[in-house]
Image 1 (cartoon, one colour):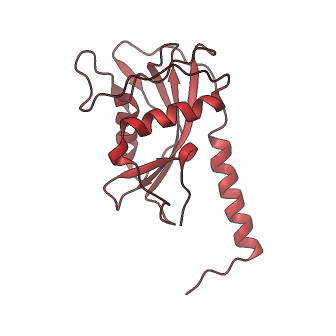
Image 2: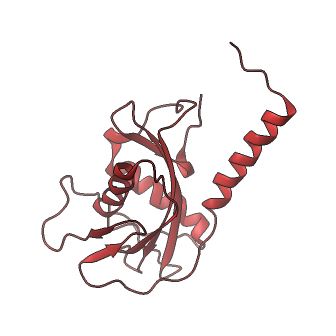
Length: 177
């Protein structure tokens, strides 16, 4: 069976792509600081390690010279990729993904995660939600947003289960097959 592009299918594909792109563009409301030692996500509370570093320490980031949250996305995404090289899906993603979720990560002036909010959580895959939140926290601190002070980094996580839980971020994706 071959895929025949029709105006309806092309329109649906364009609408889906526009939705994913727009979901990652907003900066959203400012966040208040969470209680010490925790970073609340929408669906779970994730504790911030207070003494021991993550299993594989995150590379020490350079500061970001981005002037807008949209510009900052590339710096944050590159930082996550550098901290998770073995977990990044190589090449084009398959046409059907296990999970797609859009997460806002609130960062202070030093690049520390203060809170997280799911704009679109993959509720059918709670293990992916938890793993994305752990991945975000393990990669901290992020590049310090020197020109903005604080920033809300919004990105869409594209998750493939077949390759052992590998992912790409929409900001740096190589596309789909």
